[in-house]
Image (tube, rainbow, N blue to C red; front, side):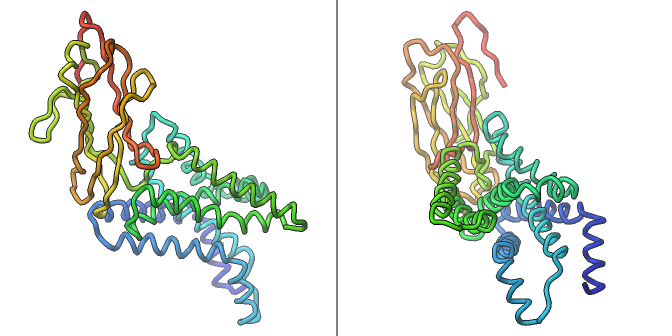
Length: 339
């Protein structure tokens, strides 16, 4: 192995957190650049995706290198390159998911898994001695990381909506996970091939069914309120509790939602009473405003006895949760609380 490559590997082994820190800083920078609608964010995302293309075609590239230059790329360098791409990608996407996660929902699980994967990627004993030998776990981390990277990068690069990005990211993750599965479980019989196809489709179906647990990486709320008043597109006092007699004139659910880089999105305010959906209202939002695009729904038709727990779930077209507004309607004898 050339001396300079050996020194590079030793430096990576000695300071594994530097790569992760670089990924996190680039993620913060890209998040800020997207927020300001600057094109440099697209280049950061493109560079990250190019590294993933190299990773997915690693075997082809290494064989071509050996054929052309008559020498092999050192295996330790390939291993650390893979680890570096995982670190860079995970710490790139984490700032986006931290800001967009609705923490009191199932999205906590997805973002928690990303955080755990990021931690594993920078701790060599966990990454090499615990994760790498368990091939199915390694492939799970690989696919999860790719999926999260695509969810973040596709809206930045291609100006896709959240709904379009989710579908495309899921399809790409499924297609690229198949070669990885095939390399780990060689297709020696047609039954094995059918099994791998079914397994790949099952992974995609699971991702689609659990889409409400996946935060919309480039869509977040900047302001929310449940109020009985709205003047000049500004809500009155936000209420966590309100008397039953005071809602007959209606309630406003107000949300200011940031859609970066001028995206156009359709979202839904889904009103729920004691866990059951009672109204679903579509809203079109547009990006570009620093404070977020202000949108609201006005509900007037309440049930005869509205006392109980209410929610307004803010969803994308595909059902991803952007945020949740919660309030209680109480009997007139109780005092309401303001927040």
